[in-house]
Amino acid sequence: MEFEGEVVRKGQPLFDIYSPELVSAQEEYLLALRQYENLSSSAYPSIRQGAERLLQASRTRLLYWDHTDKQIREIEQTGKTRKTVTIHSPASGVVVIRKATQGRYFKPGTRMYKIADLSTVWVDVEIYEYDLPWIHQGMTAEMELPYAPGKRFHGKVLYIYPYLNPQTRTAKLRLEFPNPNYELKLDMYANVYLKSTIAEESLVVPQEAVIRSGDRNLVFVSLGEGRFQPREVKLGLEGNENEYQVLEGLREGENIVVSAQFMLDSESHLREAIQKMLEVRSGTSQPPSGVKAHEIKEDDLDMSGITMEDEPKKTGSHQH
Image (tube, rainbow, N blue to C red; front, side, top):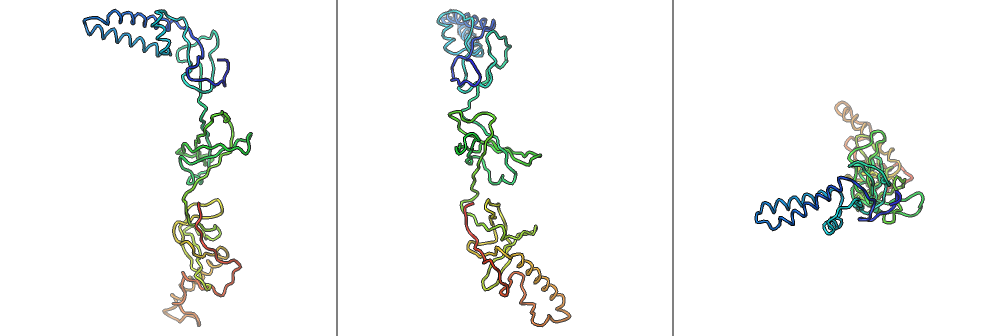
């Protein structure tokens, strides 16, 4: 093995090592093997079992020293120890750390190689917290690299971290992408595209049709013949096309006002104020000439005398 970044296969030789403890472990295994061969025919079961346990313990020690089954069989067949032992790659992948050099001394536990399986890579991205309702685990993701514009890589959302970054107010996602040709390199930057469907069919209205007062959300529904009705609605998610998802309050096909709704709202509040004033005065005086208290309703506005440039718009059912 010559350099970092080289692709290796599982079982490929990496380097040879010499260790006195390694040689001693091989000698102990040969002694245990001979003892087992001599005592395997003993008339005493305890002696046979003891020799077998000692042989198994010696073999396990060699496995802990990274001997392969083939190397152990070679020791059994030749009856000789090896001065050096070849260390093989435990997995297929790319060498990202290589510290083994000729003549180098190292202690037990020292990491000589680090091999990463880059056939599948993780991509960490951050999104704003208001985008979280659109994200779910397992949804598809696409990625584009700056050095390969126009080419899309396809993956999925592997994990959504359960916390936010308090400084940026963003959430962290981990995406997974296949990388069979190693086109995706470590520490690269990329543009990620996430596509999510909250519901196959949703009732949506334009944002300009909604009057948001803080306490409630109103939409004016056209009743025909210049009459309008303020309708409180429950909103869902905000779409990418300046639309709101409507959860409650409207039915598909109803005509709603998308322009001059603030004028209608002002008229609604004015009539409500007149209604309350008439209720207060009803005990002492009559309503003004031409005005009847029972004809004034908050929820049903007769605006036949008002001409608006924009026609009422139907609510629609769109994919969201």
